[in-house]
Length: 508
Image (tube, rainbow, N blue to C red):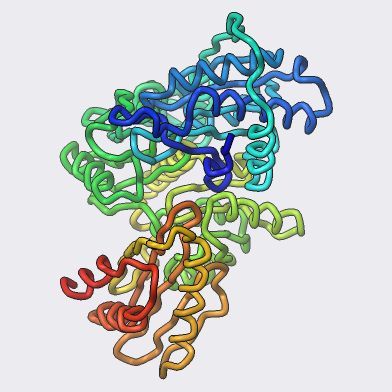
């Protein structure tokens, strides 16, 4: 059985629902059972004890296929003799926390993050964190060789309301962090905070974290889990999603708006005046919070951040900014590596909204990120300041954009690597153009001409047959010149659909 195609970086993902053609489902019950059994064997070997001595937790997000996949996971783990805590609807970060507070040897979360409703997947944790790409590959290779257990008995799992435990943990963090002299147990009294959960798991944050602490959450939207995501994609990087929380924040005259992705491992926010705190601005806020307690510390980000963010982290905050290759696990692993070498590295964060604080196990947790932002909002309010004041010195480029080009070659990895080399060759012969030395992936091409002053990053997507291109320019009108130069370079390239770039150049 071919299962390696289900590998998506450090997760397992595939099509779980296909009403028009059920035969096209690749995350079948058999596939899920094989992979679950392989994870149990992997964990037994890693922990050095038989599967019958393992304690595993299992949870899921709001997707319509969750119940079917949950049953397949529980069935195979029961067959392996594993002791199971059934957490039901839960966030991905909460599932990791079961390995810290419930003594679980591992955790399985059924989720496909922000991907469409018809997708689903499996994410695995040990007490040390998420699995590496190599470990996922090994599990899938084992699963391909080993059929599901011959078992049709009764599922044995202990139901547990772990999300309540996790919410209590977040409430405690806010109470301790704000330390309100007026009302310690209701530190958010007088604040209006709206939540947009996009019908994912994150609605709990409004009802079970903010409201009990005194916050007015009137105006929150799409809190009810609905695996069809009827209102917008739960994704802080998505324009429609950010437009939704921005509108809700302004409509409610709220002090803050917060938004999560489907399984709450990413977050974003909107200030009272409608300023979006996502991507580079979100990184700046998180860095301000992390470095306040770690002077001179290192902040590891992905490679597509602004030059102005580097200046903000290093000149305004007095820290060190390390750009690394995209992929939240890559950024987290680099932060952990630097920390192990004795470098004070309190934060790893992607512009996508994956933020991992060292004091929180380097766990990418959208609810924890938002919790830290809310604490900071309260402390700033005492000083008569706002979150916008916190990042007032952050310089944004005059223009920025992202375009995604589809690779039409079936062997998209090989084609993508050739295209990156092709772009570098084109750039090497141009005046006032140079190839950056600080890019860990793809090609970062810098334009130094006086009327441009910008760059683009041309890279290969980790999971999909796509070339994302991130543009930024410090001169108004320079971005179009950069884009048109790139279009000219790619005009004779093969295996790439240029239509989005062509449209961009014609409409910009």
